[in-house]
Image (cartoon, rainbow, N blue to C red; front, side):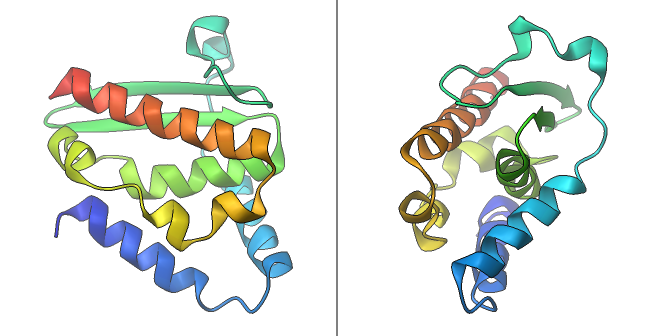
Length: 137
């Protein structure tokens, strides 16, 4: 099991502590509030993720043999989803990102409890992360 898969399993286990989706939504929003600052100068069209209802800006840099991601959204729940993805994929090796499944999304039941547009945005963010990993591999 690589580092990405370990982070996925830890997150799924963490979500099991919540009894209902109201608590899960609040936790996701709280995670988003803790995102690091995103450079305002990088909030440009070139860095926007297409397919998201909200505005999402995303950056990827290679730091040695790992990928470093930064992202932000203008929506609270989407910022929380970003925080989840960064927790799993940030500062990981491209090969580990590419080799890891994305079934944690189903295990967290995110697609069932997000609006279709939010689910599409989440899928777009995952594709972007995998695309950056593919380019860096």
